Length: 463
Image (tube, rainbow, N blue to C red):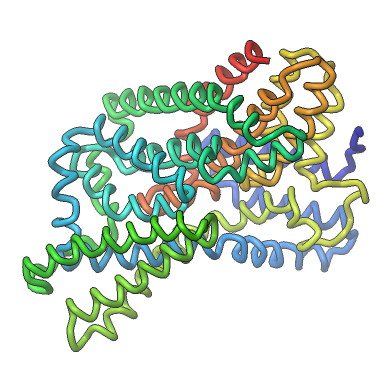
């Protein structure tokens, strides 16, 4: 069914184009997003007061949506700080330091480990776990922090999440929408996930090495990446450091076991990791600082929260605008979209699907386009049901390729929105590495675009 686009849809499209243009030019987009929120509210409600209020309400909505991520990053940073100050971190990373000797090994080892862990309990908790331990190793091996963030992001939120072979939440959503079994979606996605992953990560690595050679990204920029790197050697004995260096990985390994046994994922997985980090923080503070342990544990938490909100502050207005493209519109502004609307972003995807002729080549390009558009809300998952529905429509019309088209739409939506390109979707990796999420998105843009183009061409031959 063709969706009639309203003025709200076109305003959203115009501001998306403006935001992308400003990001490409390395300019801040906060003002553009706030103006976009105001105009969308003004056109929808016709009320100046409601439009001004809409800006504030959109910020509240964005903070609420991002709060779990802000908390896990803040807590992990607080824990990492006490690990660093007590010297436990040095003992923990020693085995990895012997193996990761150079930037190349650091990039690929971190990426592959991230991918494997993300398959079992999704990328955000995996970033929190790996970042605290492997980031210092990679920095000492000469890999810039931006390169560490790229590796964790592309392998975790890209390869692992787009295939979702173990947890299978993504293929279930797309498979149900396309009325095909989950197994068909997974089987069809394997060659596409491999193509996308190989092309994108190799492209990203080549571009990273080139810019390191040309001096555009310097390993010297790693200085100050890890907050509060002052180490107090007298806080713990060597035996205590060794004990906690073993105890902490075991604690998180038990989390992995619990996630698997209890089938926890997403927010539940993040909560378990975050709670474990809080207990570790408290125990270390009490043991290391003794009588001052109570006060120091609070100080570490304050440091973590300061870091978390400093990193997320610039992102909240931008996230607020993009949330208007999905379910956030009705909650922030009100029920002003057409009754048949599935949300601005999904409406745009449906309109694109309804306006193209049906051949296997155009079907593949269209599914990539729909996946990219629906991924703009920064979720990655909100639009994959639409991708499955459109894949079923196209597959029926051309007589084949429903599973391949479904997998293509799923992969595109998650790579774009799940997130390797949308700044707030890749905040976990950026925050752990203390780099700008906008700079990380810019670094990912060309490799991901190349990967999507090649994967779309491969899909044409598989349909």
